[in-house]
Picture 1 (cartoon, rainbow, N blue to C red):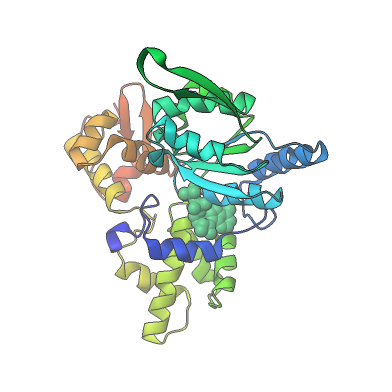
Picture 2 (cartoon, helix red, strand yellow):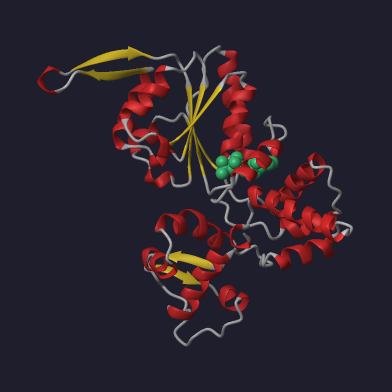
Length: 336
Ligand code: ADP
């Protein structure tokens, strides 16, 4: 559906399979995020020189920027098996105990959306991360006792779109936190050139640049748009050049800045109903009928990044560029 084409937090099963084929397998193949790559490389090399499991790693940032890919790379580069889990799948401490107690020595445990794990499991995880041990409750009521269980040493890689929601004791137990940033256009061109090569799809430089400018700074969306352009060129029997890219993306309503339906809805409410703000995040979320978590972790970071809104102590405010992009005359009170 075209509405979801530029939503980095929505993924179909078909896309998961497609993404799997395009995932870089080593840090050297991973495009951009130069600083984080260097930091991870150091951490992995040091652990390998000392013959121990690498420190626990927290990957924070908006969806589609490469957190799952990096977790896989950590396992691959350190030659360790990988176990995948997610916060929503861990609803009780028992769910976590089952995963932790079945890890093999040195395994990398990836917990996606770690901020959505049950509170009781978080507490169990503190001890597991620190001492590779958990306490299991046996029995019920007055006769219940806690039995310690030794775990195999492991490396936890947690991913979150909302690092601010993690309790401090959990955040403090990660040896390293990487904050992933939106990608620059030249990096996105590289992501796209790599994907096009793997898909045996010939797209010229200008075409790559056109997609790179419209993918919300996000590799997941870049790859998704590339696939649509490939379909378009195939069906219309056209060369895949910049004109074909523009025609394909117009067909799918992809805005020149890469804004999607929800971004546009938020901006229009902010500009038209609230005269450019300031307005609180929750009010914006209610007005567009979305969870405030989605607005905060998916929509807002990108709108701030491209300079359409700013955050102020009194709420979110539209910038002069936002009025211009949407072709609306600022109301009298705007920018006061
Ligand atoms: P997240 O876990 O942050 O939502 P993923 O790791 O699933 O994001 O990345 C989404 C897709 O984008 C992957 O299939 C991968 O192919 C691609 N991707 C992400 N980051 C990069 C990168 N730095 N270089 C190349 N491809 C990337």
